[in-house]
Every structure is written in C-alpha cells, then in structure tokens.
Length: 87
Image (tube, rainbow, N blue to C red; front, side, top):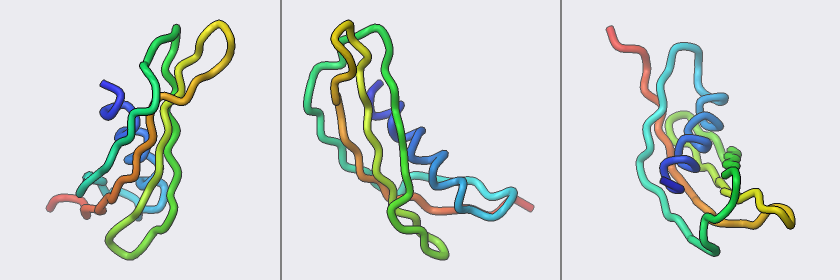
C-alpha cells in the first residue's frame, strides 16, 4: 500500500511535465522502508528530479502523521515514461 501511494504521487509529479493529454507509466522504482507505517494519516509527496523528452526521474516520500508529529516511513526513486494520447 505504501509503494502504491508514493508511486502515484511520483506519477502525478511526472505528469506535470508531460504535454497535455499524455499519460504516465512507471518504468521502474526502488523503495526504501525506514519505519513502520503507523499513524492516523499517511502523506505522500512526489517531485521531479529530472524531466527529459521521454523519461522522467522522480523522488517520493511517505510520512505517517502521529501524535508527536510526522515520521518518515518510506523513500522512493522512480523512472516514469510519458505516453501520447491513443488514436
């Protein structure tokens, strides 16, 4: 569940660099889990590190909101590819 959440955040980050109408697919990703995902809410953020013509490299983080603040749960590095509209 954690990787799905942060992969989606990275996908939307990559989509901000794609032409209108394009879709984005994950080519590969590597996740590091650094703490249990305990808390009331999980917050995922994704950011583009390098956008090329076809491939976009993103990094993402997941934090768990707990009573004492936020705890880093996972880190992700992902490679995304843009797909033009079908048809």
